[in-house]
Amino acid sequence: MQKTPDQITVLLSRDFPVIAADLLKNEGFIVNAWNQERPMTQPELVEKAKKSNALLCGGTDTIDSRFLKECSHLEIISQFAVGYDNISIPDATELGIPVCNTPNAMSDATADVAFGLMITASRKMFYMHKMIAKGEWSYFRPKGFLGMELKNKTLGVFGLGRIGVEMAKRCKGAYNMKIIYFNRKPNPQAEQLLDATLVSFEELLHQSDVLSVHSVLSEETKGIFNLSTFNKMKSSSIFINTSRGGLHIEPDLIEALNNKIIWGAGLDVTNPEPMHKDNPLLSMENVSILPHIGSATMEARNEMARMAAQNIIEFYRSGNPTNNVNPDFLKKKQL
Image (cartoon, rainbow, N blue to C red; front, top):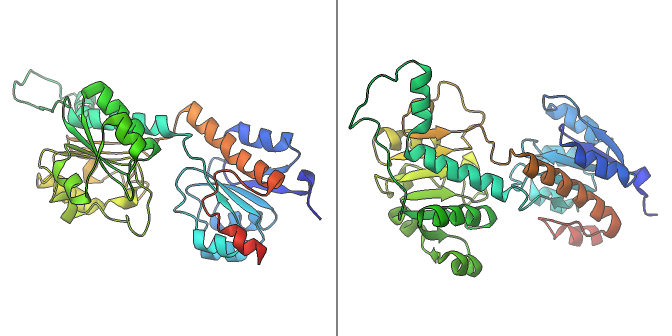
């Protein structure tokens, strides 16, 4: 017998924007929302998930094999994020649990951060601000603290999806930058829109003045930006990562910057997160770092909450959840 919403408990693992809980409650679901500022511990998450039918979780929640084994009864998992590398998709699929995400909700917000990091790194803005705060703004230095201009440079995009396209649009519109990209498969729409050129990974490294990372984190991409790849980039290049910290090896990035293998970097994601306050990257004059705030606008976070809740609502309405990342779950359900 099919359950009605008033028989379904949805666990919200964090203090998400109120629109998520409101949408679910308006549909008649029972909502159990974590309302503390700190995240739940893993035992707390397991305990509460065991009493729930559906889980609306965040990208920092660990939904691994152990969790899914203990919570195999869950009927759907909806992630308040685009990425889902924190979730064991093969295990969820094997258990017949659909996993959903919130694509496109944060494309503009994250692209703005990538664009801003490119500008601030190119002009050493974060470092200059710290100088003022330390009382070190003294006299004019004609050859001091020189940055670089971005007009007519080449932007290389690693992962030309929704966010990568928005970053490229900003770079082309503001600075007439040439757009090259590396993808698993061509993006003909972006090529037409941006006059973008698909290149090999090697060519991306060799040709990019700014290399901006917008890829998912997977076994294939984990640690792909390391000392070997940095050595293939221009000594004048800037590395930007607003995707996942796991795509770059941080000690290798530090070495590449210290030895002037590359010129600068802008990071909204670090490896590990959170970054330690004594990390040498924080004191480098041509590096800009933010604490993973790519989606941190009111508009983006509200839309993420709406989409994450709507994924669950649609699943219980039709059996076909929106924004499903593991459609093979249906095969397991039918066995």
